[in-house]
Length: 292
Image (cartoon, rainbow, N blue to C red; front, side, top):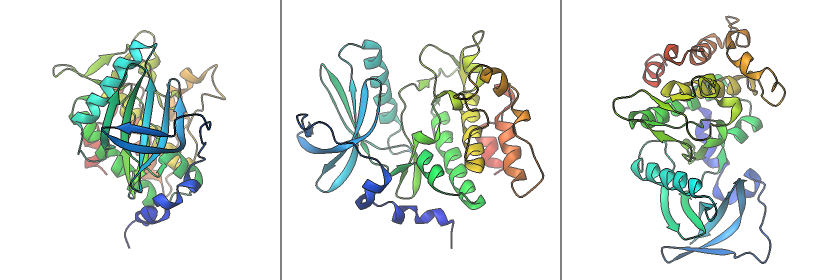
């Protein structure tokens, strides 16, 4: 048989969504339906929230979708970044491993982004399952190919983490391009103006006050952290328990990623390469695929 992870699509069918997410139903007085392009979608519950946005599980004609609702009424900067996210999703529509943008709606208060529904994200999948070497390789190759698509379109995602990969029909798809940015054709980096990603997965050059730059290598660093997490079920340096000296520690990752020459030696070598301090020294996605 092929990688056992091909069974994911059977294990996480839409009919079993209650087991995959702790769905919280909104207050009874909230509007339970949303209309987009004259189609009515029933809100089943919240599957994510943060800041000024909520993500609902919605249903239309017995098909489930994810509906991201961003409140932009008092935040023009958020409005701009959300419209940029929509633009990126439209440009990448139909590309390998990119979440499919179904429809949008914009009014004075909210921006509604209707997306295909991923039954579970990679963060939850890692927590709930022991990953074999085949499983790690299965997910790693998909993440590389997805990021290859992103980078070939001159986009830096800037928030690569397990929670931003969802499983759709047994395969990974990348979501949440809210802080992603396009880079010009004649440059290789982007000066940091907006928010950085989730700290445990952020490359050190993004947090360095003298640099504050994103590169494609910054996304590669984040992939290296994910690969480490798939192997050990934890990140190498957790910000929540090492906040005081966390930045210093992540700049010396060789201290935390040791190659013992065992079964996972090749995986560890890849991790160490992705977590090199200087982003110019990290392999590109293409190089990682060539040596896969």
